[in-house]
Amino acid sequence: MKGESRFVGLPGIIDPVRSPEWLDSAGSNVRVASSVTAYRSLGLSEDGRGIFLGDRVVLFDHVRLVLGDLAENGEAFIRIGSMTMVNAFAYLSGEGGLDVGDEVLIGPGAKILSAGHDIDGEPLSIYRHGLTYGRIVIEDGAWIAAGAMILQGVTVGQGAVVAAGAVVTRDVPPCAVVRGVPARVAGSRGGLGSMGDVRLTGKRGRQPGWLGRIRGLVSTLLRR
Image (tube, rainbow, N blue to C red):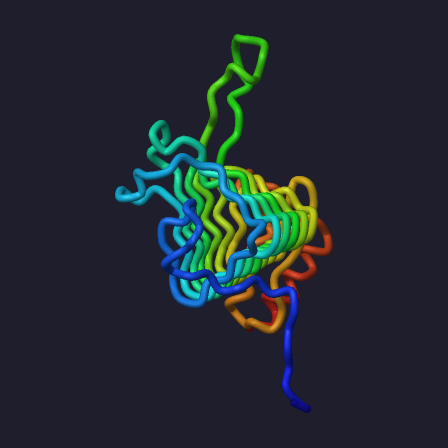
């Protein structure tokens, strides 16, 4: 009818009775594209390991979820909060634990990597080395833009923005905007008042550039 909106390309709502075998639990009105895949062993979800989706989560085409062997890794899980959308070709590793909050946006081709490879010592072949793990937390309302990469052990704060193509190796403060390789705080989201105030220094004591110092001074003057 005239005036009604219709959408195409949105994944269908999964049937709770016939949900994918890789899914341990899902809330209501969860949409999962038929091309979404998962790499994991089955079972062992009673202790918190597994894949858990909240209400109205959307996983678009060719999203890849990875847990590995749950029998060998007691930290492996992926929890995705309500209203979160994961766009096409994103790669989500929960081998070290991945906790995604509510209303998070994960852009196409983003990579969230809670596991890596030990590179030190013998043997020469990395194939024969063990894995390293670090839980990743993405808090409510954050946006991980297209092609961004989040490495193990990182927390992305509430409402933060990770710019397209950024590689995040350290925690991101709430409401911060980070960009670059490796990612650095470029500023904070505007129009949020005191919620948007972000320290422009990293964990290692890196001082902000001249533009950051000017922004910090203006922010201080406006609060007086």
